[in-house]
Image (cartoon, one colour):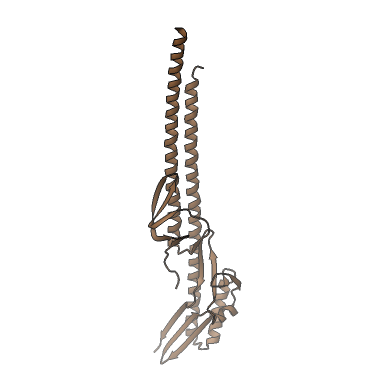
Length: 107
Length: 169
């Protein structure tokens, strides 16, 4: 009888531990979701800021890489299924490159 | 064994928090990086605006000066304007083709080959014009690449011109 009690106690303990681990895992999943959302928003904002800067400074090219999607005046970025968007001042079309419409300068 | 499970859960939560913190720092770093890039772009634009304003000012002042001293000799006028402009642009800009590939530095000779000056006076009206014409092949400009990743170009475009009119009497 004593060993049966011990088994039950151990099972309860393990079940409790499993629940706690489940909760931690759930938290981890939530945190990952938040990180992916933040990451997507950060990248969308980064692209939008650079495009806005190109527009306002009448810049002609960007030598680094931007991995954003574009839909007219909206920039989007997907990170592990989380898609975030950011608005821009100008319009952009995407073929193989992002083409930013800028104002003509110094004529 | 006492307290082991609680300790293990606390450690696991700490790992999750650490993970969150790393993700947060990465985003912070990305923002800082972008901010630096934007500042460099603004700086490049400021540099370009200064070059443009000063070039405009030099051409405008020298053109007015030709009218004031009644210098109707276009060769002398062109030389006077271009030497002042070359003094300013030398070292700051390059003589380039349309693809901004440099083929030397800007000097008076280069500017003279690439520009034209016209000064006319008829019945008390003096008209003066400076035009950046480029060569007959229309493939030489004065330009400068500015910025690091966000690139802007200072250029005196082909067809750039300044006009002055003076009415006397």
